[in-house]
Length: 140
Image (cartoon, rainbow, N blue to C red; front, side):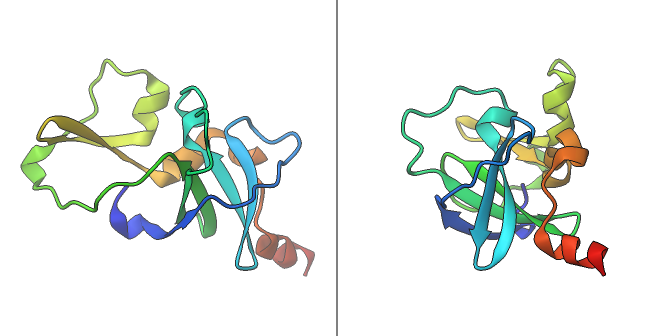
């Protein structure tokens, strides 16, 4: 995800479970009065849960006009990589993961996958909890 896509980063927040929400939606958080859907990136990427999630971090981004929290294990440094280090997503990856990864960056001793936040929430737009401010607009 590009650094410009990130609105802010906050430590683990109290999450309220949402019945009938898709499995990747961990729940809702209250971010200074804004109700924000929280997507568990481990669940989305079909990774096992952490033994201790108390250090998880919410990466807040705006997608389709609404705030969304991406729950991640940790964040690293902001890096600026030259264009020649980026490559397309390998065709051998499954379609689910290829849909959310836009490019792969070659770093010394590591690879960095660039994710598209717009595509992350496309897993099930119909069931994604709608922010309260949108409910107000509908009622008017």
